[in-house]
Amino acid sequence: MEQQENVIVYDDYLGFSKPVSIILAAIFITSWIFGVITRFKEKKIAYAIVRLFLGFNILWFLDLIFIIKDKSIFRMP
Image 1: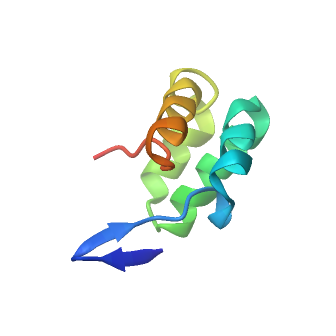
Image 2: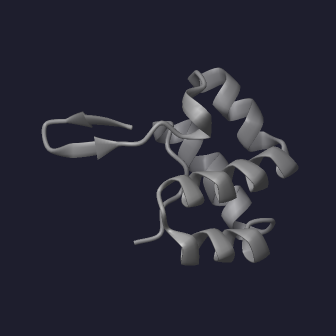
Image 3: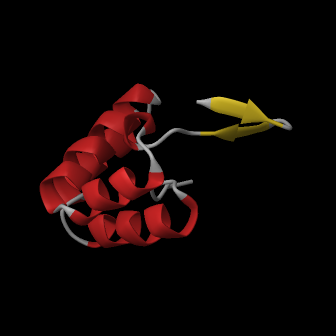
């Protein structure tokens, strides 16, 4: 996690480069696992549980789009 100009920038998928992150996001099971791990790492337990049970459907697709667009997985408010 880096901080730039009072904005927190998260290193998703454990800080891998963008091409590796895109590949990991495209693979269903790794996207699901890393989504849950990332939420636990951020101490967002409720979101981690939501990802655990619902991360295999629409959240997987959103992660893929967001990782391609701005190298950050989809974040719930």
